[in-house]
Length: 370
Image (cartoon, rainbow, N blue to C red):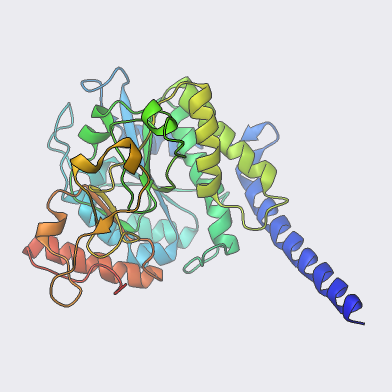
């Protein structure tokens, strides 16, 4: 009798898992046509042209675009703060020096309601709004490995690929972050072909690519990366790697109910970057900060950046006052990302706190009390 019950439970779990995987696979197919990833719409191409930053003075390529995406929940709670942070950051060099970065963002909305909310924000900010009617997005916050969470990766990769194939370098930013300084000098000046943010506070030498002999010689694997902040150079090898990322996601979705774009990104880029001799780098976690890092952000000294310490966990900067962080912590930061912070509404509250702290130069609570 027990064996029969166990068999029934196993079958039911298998059916449930298969059903979840099939649902994600069905939703994912909306981003693919018969012969591959869907081509960009005319409006998406126009939005990218309008938002493109001229980078010809800093590289041998012509332009760069910043891309983000949002549903109604994000547009209500985090996107206005995200846009406000971009509006306060000016491009520091080149033809567009002095212009603010909100005008260099293409924000993709998924529903008509989200598009209306995006358009309403254009009364204050200079971003481009475009709708992706192909993406079947649920409303509200997406729980980890919910259908909405699992399928949004397909949309993200499509936008990145379509930006690259149009000839633009692409910076992809999640909309639950604050931009504090111009990131372009870092992204264009470090010699990388692709960058990803650190998932955890670990010692890395951000000047080295992840296949450098200093990593390989010590038997170290690439550190886990977070894809809330990504950069891709518009080259043939990089574009091929992004296409492989999309294709592997599509092929695995029917068998993996919890397909995760971040997981597949790490696996594909590790192989593809090596094959195409690309410089795939981690963003320095001391300036590209995350709420997943301990206390008031990741820190380590340059002296600690030796091969035997690569990948070791590092410490967080200590809180001050009532679990508060202040200008002494974020003075050099370029980005503060807010994963590991709860619901979209809660993320917005921490983002609002930090924006106020930055503007007024005072300590505030920007993270959960770990």
